Image (cartoon, rainbow, N blue to C red):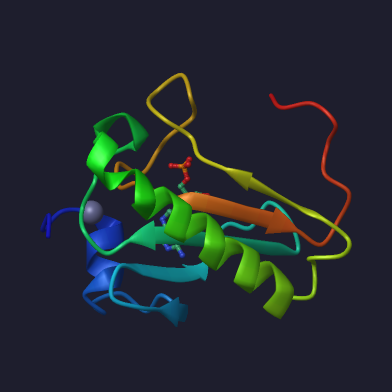
Length: 115
Ligand code: 5GP
Ligand code: ZN
């Protein structure tokens, strides 16, 4: 755990993040500043700063996070209407929080362009 990492603090239960899913490897919670009616973040419990820090051996972790996102999309009722998964990596990729996270967005028609 990185003491000054806000997402590590949510993993540790130190911030009042509304954890809506958890297993041995990941947790999911609602984004504090939602960009869509459904905006969840799926993150590894282990501190990985960004996608570029994910080793080949850890590729299954992203697969697991996508599986969880699909399950949560069903649970949130947006699996039929559609949703978007986003990972921002680095400064120009729009990453603000330096702990790997997968955005799950849905519940409205999202823009046809990707920034
Ligand atoms: P990024 O731009 O790094 O891909 O996304 C970071 C996301 O984390 C943003 O959408 C932001 O609203 C969300 N976020 C930042 N701090 C907190 C927090 O303390 N709690 C929750 N639930 N979300 C946060
Ligand atoms: Zn962290």
